[in-house]
Image (tube, rainbow over all chains, first blue to last red; front, side):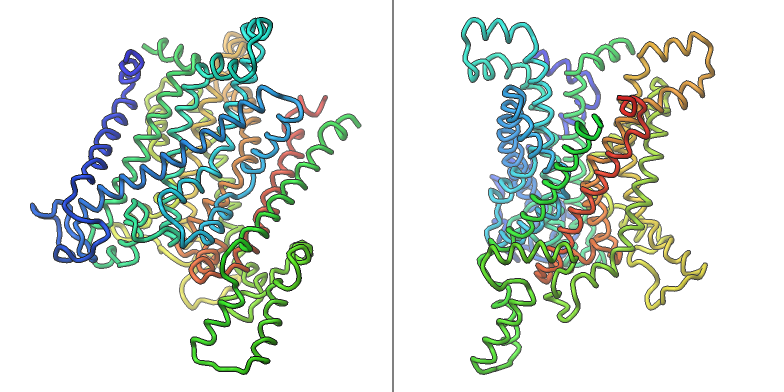
Length: 284
Length: 335
């Protein structure tokens, strides 16, 4: 609780915390939605915002507001699946590489370098084309997880490398602690905040990629996400027909989501970094 | 000699291994598909209302397999694919039928290359200089304003940002063309007016890439410079009365630029992906738009060609940057 209060003192964290809460409430509203998001033509088409339809309706005869609640929920689900699964891979790879060292380290870091260097977007597009028929929230999340771990594995590894050289490692080893308990019990507390900040960054990346893939038509268009919502609006010419409420809703929501998540992660990692903490104290 | 053995040889082995892994992935992924591209094409042809006897059909299928590199066992296909990569021959486009893939790539490559080289260089230079100055004077108000701007721009994915610029300049303030590489129906020529036309069309894609890329370089540079600032040689120079401009330009930024060169090498793959996506938004006639058309029409040959060539081009550029690095860093040169 004290950490949260400290973090909230940073205006960026306070803003992003408020926005994330707002978006989370929107996503939760989808559970009480009066409409099924896959059904078409339950309201008049192309109505501009009014009291009955807060954000208007689209050319598919759906209420944009309720559609958006589902879109946020699904985009968040994809990004949480992608980010948490890729965190598991990153932790295992980073900790093994950092702790075992030598050949294991070199082999694993070569693997993660390969992932970093290769233009992954093209490979992801090829895979997405292959999986087109099976595309849903879980497959997309897992696919992004498979590609999203490389950088963070390096970050975690370097943290472990520095922890390995500290005295308490030697004390623990001499008193007979095994490798796994040592890593889980002694190293994890140091690495957890770092992992959390990379988790948020990875969510931003996953949401962005989901939107890009959806625009390219590689996502299942029946599932409402921020990306598919934007794709429908673009392909149905919402721009030319002047249905701004339909086009701007997914755009504004995703921009809010990107900024708030990114600011939260920056603010957390600055809070964790002792050097910038000193600068902050000095600035006051 | 020591440099050769400890640095160059492992680096070259790594380079070859990355290309090997990448191209192998490009070979394997389409072959996991449940549907056979040749049978798909035949089915499309038949659905258009052509009937042929069985013998001709078998012959056509065999010829097409040969053309698409799908004849023989998987292992033979794999070896054959490597031969194709080396010859830069990726067979024939499935959607634009008799055109070889390499011709399609060759016509769109100059557009992408021009856009990519120009924007990468500009955003790296502008971002680093601004970031360096802002990092040195990090208490100033304009430095903080720039920082906030970068904080807003940075998390945007390429697609969203390019699309936002398209909305602003296409509908609210239409001063620049929002699509294509040059005015419709205009023949390429080496005249001043054609060059200006091309530049005008490149302005929006380039602007969106420069702002996004610049924000990344600005932020990382600012962070590095803030750390260099507290080092003793900077304090010493200040106390010794060295002019402030010289401290910033000659000492601080110069020292902070070195990690930025390494970062450029690491980010090249992402920069390429971003350029391809930006091209799609502005329907710029480069490789990205070609990629989009191939995705829509399911043209695997073109996608495989683009992906393998990109992997080779990116890893080679990173190798070149790494090998040039000693030129910038005297410490590496001496050891």
